[in-house]
Image 1 (cartoon, rainbow, N blue to C red):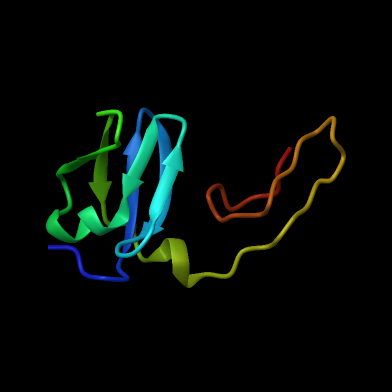
Image 2 (spheres, rainbow, N blue to C red):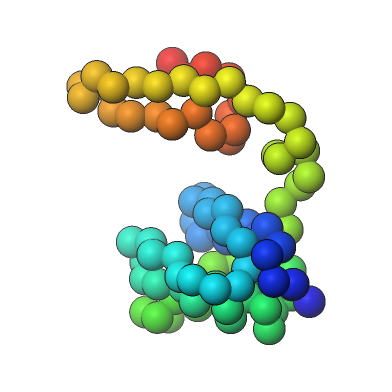
Length: 93
């Protein structure tokens, strides 16, 4: 069972969303997920958005949060904006 405040990874077709279980919602292009509903779920199950799209529930590996990552910022509109989250652990191209 997932506890209040526990970090959870929600996955849908290659997209990953890191959230904390409990109060609030996650808005995606596939609908809105009530984060309170995670408290009644277990890793390996799915949770549906208000549009009925299922997201897989996983517990992220601890190493995603233990090591500091460098922060890079791109502000050139032609290159987009990258906020330095630790998903790839390397400088963006």
